[in-house]
Image 1 (tube, rainbow, N blue to C red):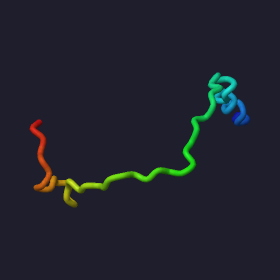
Image 2 (spheres, rainbow, N blue to C red; image 1 turned 90 degrees about the vertical axis):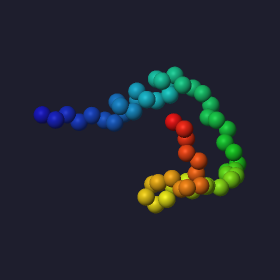
Image 3 (cartoon, rainbow, N blue to C red; image 1 turned 180 degrees about the horizontal axis):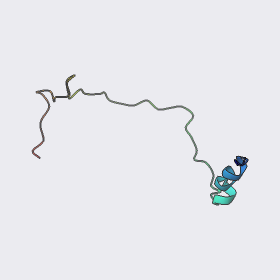
Amino acid sequence: MATNYSANQYEKAFSPTYLQNWSLAKPTKQSISSHEGYTQIIANDRGHLLPSVPRSKA
């Protein structure tokens, strides 16, 4: 016979009071900073390295 359990018995184990992680949240930035630079393509559509890319010695 199947038994129904409430979801509280599972969620209660992961609550901050039981995990004892009473730390404050990290401060967040007001606005997101943009990334600098650009993406350089090193492979063609088939996955082979382009001739201009230096190959490793290993």
